[in-house]
Amino acid sequence: MPKNIDKAAHNSPNKQASSSTSQERSVRAAPRVALPCVIAYCRAGFEADLAEELEALATAAGVAGKAVGTDMTAFALFIPKEARDVERLRATILLRDLIFARQLVWSSGIVAQLPADDRVTPILAAVREHLVPATPADHFARLIVESPDTDHGKELSRFCAALSRPISNALQRENLLPKSEPKVATEPTLHIFMLDASCVYIGISDPGNSSPWPMGIPRLRFPVGAPSRAALKLEEAFRTFMTPEEDARFLAEGSTAVDLGAAPGGWTALLVKRGVYVTAVDNANLDEALVSSDFVDHVRADAFKFRPEGAVHWLFCDVVEQPSRVAALVGAWLERRLARNAIFNLKLPMKRKLGEISECLAPLGKINLGKGRRLRIMVKQLYHDRKEVTVCALSDSLNDKPDGSRGGPRKRPQFKSNQGAKPKPSTKPSTKPKPKTNAGPGSPRRPSRSGGQHRRS
Image 1 (cartoon, rainbow, N blue to C red):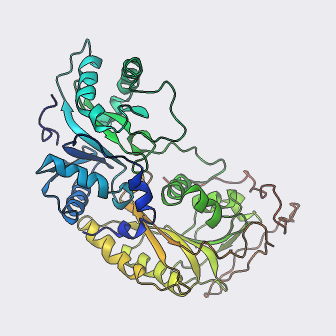
Image 2: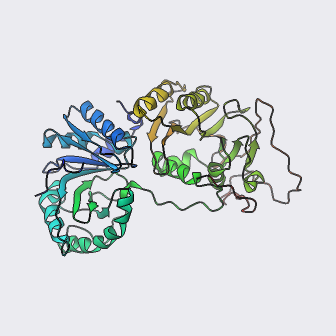
Image 3: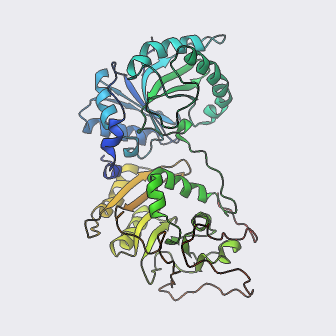
């Protein structure tokens, strides 16, 4: 029997984002037993903020209980007063509604004092007793053995990998786990969450309401030629905030974007790789390979004063500034129709993080786009974020074709700063071919990898 779950240990802007809520909730059939707590993973140092979110959402669902977030453990718990109330939370709380959560696991509690010579048997017994009855089909789609995203948790990563195989084999012998993972999971994922070598949480995550990645951390390849690791943050944002269909629609080749605070060019490089024409705005130097690209205009200007001559599909903004000022800047672009969609970062204060986020984003939720369009505002602390969150303001105008969408002509827009600043002209004669003006099936030409590399941590 698992031991006491207490051992280890606002209204979210993302509430506006749940356009596919009913679909996500309908994936899971009703289980036959209740699980007594929910575990949410996060970045170490943000446990209290995540606990505050969990408690607020539970209160909104009419569930009384206690949220626990112990500093630097990289997870938080919510323990309802009545165990049966977890099922109400499981039917209403979505991972995308939580700003600081990377993963949601519905847990039966801790399995402790695991013997060093046989950890598999007691774990399997607890899974059989408490988790199998909580699944609609008496089996799991896959197994994840993981640990918290802390220094101690990283030391356990090899141990998790070593333990995964014998647990998987034992589950397969009892027909509780398929021999190969399904391409589309319709059953819960079994999680073994290791606190140390002798103590684990066991739980399940629901398909459609969980992260597909172990620990909720995406495994992304560093883009070839990108001048900074900031490109990984933007790639994670695309995968977090948009479905593959939305990605193809809103980031079609030939789309146009403005990147405020672009230097040294991590975000710009990723956009160019996708065939997006970018005006990179920064008084600092941009990576030389990007400056020489036909897909980039480098404008030396103040990010808060620059305005384009015509509207663009995307505004990207990653500048170090007060979050209220950044949100007001992005809101002005969206309200004046200078950009249709935006992804930007808000640097967080030491205290009142959730309150600050809500206050900054409230005006964006009131923007009227006209023609029945609205902004879908989503907020997440991504794995590649640090003391910040990433915000996506996405227009739902899927029926309107952007000027540079596939199948139409592509004309590279010309931009200028309202300060009159212009990029320094190149002294080298260009020998590169001009980009194609029709939307053929081939990929756009990518920037050269030559030139100085500036990296931002």
